Each structure stands twice: as structure tokens, then as C-alpha cells.
Length: 324
Image (cartoon, rainbow, N blue to C red; front, side, top):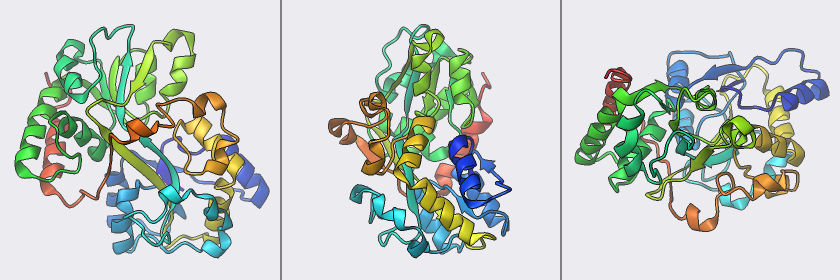
């Protein structure tokens, strides 16, 4: 498997190995979709069976020959995916991916330390200098661009030169105040208060609210809007163990296994059948299972990987991190 860090419940992996007699389960990680794509474009073949790209990268993976059509006859539990998540633009025929889970990109605060109102991306940028060196940001270009573009009132998928120029100014203003770009351990930095404000996902964050020392943690979906993203399961074109890949996908779609994924990773399942096994407290959490009125503020991701300007701005942003 080639996946994001700590993105499958360990007990599920052990149960899969036990049920199917899989002696060796290799789990390699990437920090961003771009890193994953670069690996495949660099010729990494035959190493992995399964990967978990964000949905908007699926068409490029298909077109570049990195993934194969799913053998749905051997993945009957694919039928349990809710219709809401089917026939999306990235896979209109539902042949190339299975929805893994979905979520948002938002603002995390340690309210014990952050006393300013930060309910919008605009406010996030405005107060950043006050918390210089205490801000963590996920290392994911698509997610990072959400903040300045939404703060400016633009589409998070903008490739307009003028709009991206304005977004660049906001990002370069933020960069000196950022502690780190971190997609894997941002939650640990929030937990230890090494960072007190973050541009993050919900994974690893929501559980901090239940610990006495970090009960002040707040994750919020900004009022000026944010992204709805969906991660997917794909089988790689040169998968060395395709039968095991199909078995895993069918296994992980079982409702009780799906529920365990949601409760471990803190992202919403795409299967209503699985919700019967999810802790009711989590089902009622608006940060995780987003209410309809808030969903209306969410914008889906498109494939913006072809924008050289976005790529250039992001590299410039990265080069300025912590350079106050």
C-alpha cells in the first residue's frame, strides 16, 4: 500500500492479514498528492497494489496509466457506497476508484492561547503575525490555496492570474509566521502547543478535544467557505498482488470495518450502512458529519495540477516558511 501516513486503522490491517493469510503488509507513505504523482511519474512501478489519492487526482492517474479499472465482480461491497458519492466528475462510471472517506480543510485553534476571533480565512491571515512561529499548515498545495482564495472571495480552484497573484501576497505574508508544513504530525504540534493555530484536516485533531489537557482545541469550518475533498482507493496498473488488492477493498468496505476507519481517522465514511457502527457522538459532530447548511458553503476540488502558476507560488511559499 502507498498511502497517507497512519491512514488505515491498525486493527483493520491486522484483521485483514489474519482473515486472508497475508504474511507481509507493506505500508509506504507520501505527504501529498503531488509527491505521490511524482513518484509514479518517476517510474516507480510494481512496488504497490493500492494507493489512496484525493479524488481530483484520479483522472490524471487514469490518463497517465498509473491505475487500472476496478474488478468490481470481486468487490461486491462497493455497492454499499452511497449514491451521493457516485458518478462524480472524477469517475463518472465508478470504474476507477472507490470512495475512501471525505472531509474538509479548516482552522484549528488552541483557544487557551488564541483569544482572537478566528472564524474566517480572512481573520486567519489577519491574526497570524500575533502567533508567529506557532502556526502549522498541512503540506498540500490544493488545501493551502483554499485559505487565501476563499479569504479573497474567489473559487478555491481559481487559475486566474490576477486572483492567484493576490493569493500569493497573502501566502507570502503568512509564510514567515509558519512553524512548519506538516501533513503527518500537525496534530502532535497542536497537542503539545508547539503550534496553537493551524490550517489542518480533522484527522488527529477531533480526538484532542476529549483529553483534559487539550479540551480547548477547536476545529472549525470557516464562514467564508472551504473545500469538500474525498480520498479514494485505487488499484495500481502494475499491482503485483491484484487478488489481495481486491480482497482488501472488499474487506475495508464492510460496514463495521468502515466504521472503525471513521472512528480512527476522524473522517466521514461514504457509506450510510457503516454509520450504524459509528459512535453516536461522532455522528452528531458537525466538524465530522457536516450539516446540510454548512455543506452548502463547501466547494469541490478540481484537478489544478496543470497550473504552473499555482505550482510556482506554492514552491515560493514553501521557501519562505519561517523566514521572518
